Length: 427
Ligand SMILES: *Cc1c(COP(=O)(O)O)cnc(C)c1O
Image 1: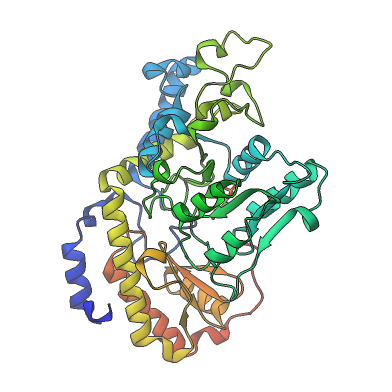
Image 2: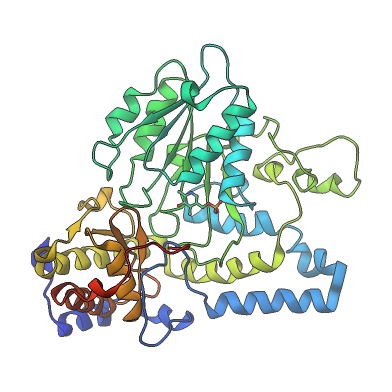
């Protein structure tokens, strides 16, 4: 793999010149001189997102309450209108996807719907490297059922703090496990789990399974139709650039459409009778049945604009560039940074690697601070990870090489030594 690349500015420029997605960068608000490596935490604002927000604002200004019927009721139907667009990115049927709430609330919604413990089958299976909100939600749902996480939460532990072993997950799918909630990509190490294999293994053992796609959606293609888990959740503000706190996604496999939503609300009622405001909830016979309250139109409008760019690029081209960007970054790390105590903590194989590079160093926190002072926006993740996400829609190969120049300067000259080791409130 390493022979594919060269460590020269001319080589990086040549990769940029050949990049079929290079034209999309101009659609984003990329600050001159800044190398943004945090698109897996909060994607950049685009001109498309801005235009859609301003348009929705205009409709509200002019039409007031009639915003709900404006433009063929687009905004009234926004969760499924935008949900259908996101469905095409993850290989799901449009009817199986809707947009609502936050990821955390959608996990609660799915557990409230699918987790029905019996004395024999009552455990929920998780791993110890998933983003903590997932296990917080699971633990609180167990308590709502009168169970304690000590006995009812089954945690598969990582052998090394980086990786989760798929065989260990499968071995943990025992007869007392009711449901598994797993991440498609680990937020720290970028490891991709084999969703098709694990979903099939869960179903063969009578275990329901849901996936958290937060760290893969928009950068790794998915085929939910083929893998057919019971549910999935994700946020739309990372690689999909939908804006801070925009609504999250929810996938409910169609075989479950007849199940009553665990958390019901009037927006989940059939559209035909929603405004009859009846006493009885009649859930929409698709993923929209799991909607709760009124959708936040202004923030969803940003997502509408952002999705146009992802749709134009197409998931195959996005994944191809992403793999090339991270491979190039790993090559440069190997060439220039390992001698300073840096280590690549993510899987190196294409099939097991998500969209970012987990660069490990004992001084990761102070190195992140030094990077920020030099125009690079990384993410620090405890305890020792400089998380670097070159976003395929707006990061260039020259950005990646410049990033490594800066990292080399910081490490070779110990420029991080002047920073305080105490963590800030938001890292
Ligand atoms: C980012 C992320 C979340 C965020 O949850 P919110 O409810 O949107 O704040 C949840 N799970 C994972 C795995 C994430 O990466």
